[in-house]
Length: 227
Image (cartoon, rainbow, N blue to C red; front, side, top):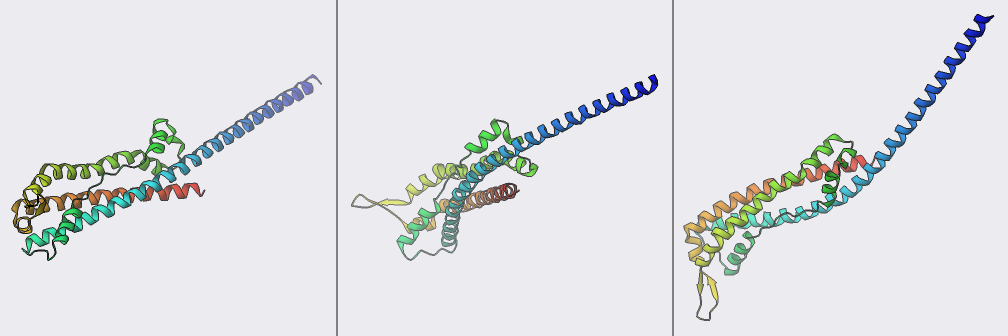
């Protein structure tokens, strides 16, 4: 009889232990589920803010690419004018080309949300590894892209603007008028168009690469917010 009582007691004790363990496991599971849900909610908030910021930056970069593309077109036309030794028929056309080829803008994106996420360590809340990597690399890509525009600006101020002053003539009325023959026949200006074209092509390549990255990031964000 004593053995039966002992066996029943052991079974009862084991059952109690099992029930306690099951309760602990269920509590842990519920806690993990709540924690994961909380992280998921934070992630969705971050992604929505990032989407707005990236969309704005895409619009801004598109304007710069269009402006620099117009600059490149003008440079190519100027180079053709000089290479073929032909004059532009209308003085206003040459003036337009000189003005258009000089366009230069530095990309100044909004990165407040991105930097806040990175600096606060919340980048880890973003579960998509590819998206996380692209976001962490974005600031460096922007810096590299702006180097080309900065270089063009530096070359322009150090070489082109002083050269342009030599190609203008002072008129009796005190105004300045550019000499088309001087511009077309200037070996220095010829060299400048070659240099400017090379710099602008390199810059546009990087800007279009940045645009591709921004659109890829936006596409990843859209896919993650739809889950």
